[in-house]
Length: 290
Image (cartoon, rainbow, N blue to C red; front, side, top):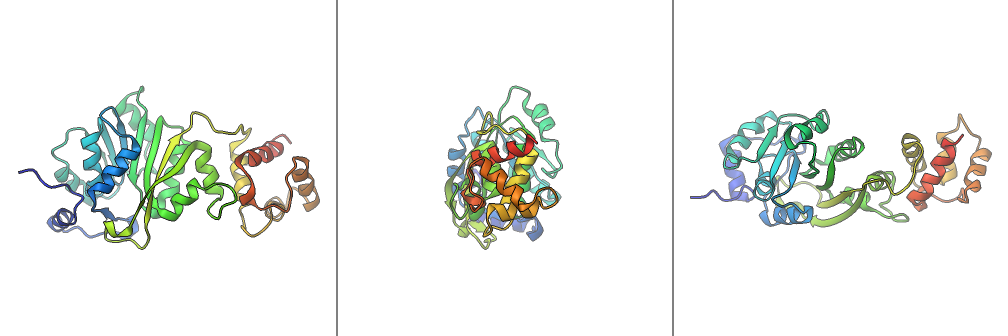
């Protein structure tokens, strides 16, 4: 008799009891127990039998199992050593899995993609990311310029909204611009906290990120561009002039900063959240030209 899917409350409890598994809060472990939601995530990710997939934090294998059913091959990174024998058991029916016991933040992901998938492959990332480490993982994957076609990630709902936010909205900030510089971002699903074990404190959102072939703006110095953006959102309630003057106080006077902003038709009284990515690029390129 075939085993029922992992992503049910009954089977999840059986697996946890069998291995006397206890959740580590420090690793943000919350396991999904709803197969329909997993099917939906895979649909939004566009995964089919031609897809090469990377998963981060497979847990006991609920999402991994569904990915293995739909994809050509899955590489799963799991940092918690206690879960390796569990995954070896729950995913034993599948031969299209490469399980790697490593922290994704320390891994040479480019080399692993080359070794497992070869040089011709574009990979898709599908993951239920721990809330506490979402942004570092995402920025590592995007900034390393890996052969990634898309990322479909389940994260804290508010963070998903921030990453996909438009200018002049409450959620828009430096994270929105950083993510949208590399990808086209959209929130494709909301996921209630009730479908997790243990239940987290907040709802989740599924964010689909289609990696851009090239950024939407031409920036002469990316490091300066992102530094300038972070400075502009230093204190949200303050004007652009106040935030930038404070950050660059050792370089420019307030009068000089005012003149710089006015030179490219940006009102110094505006706030960071009102500037588009194009305006930030214009500002950064003016700074870079000095």
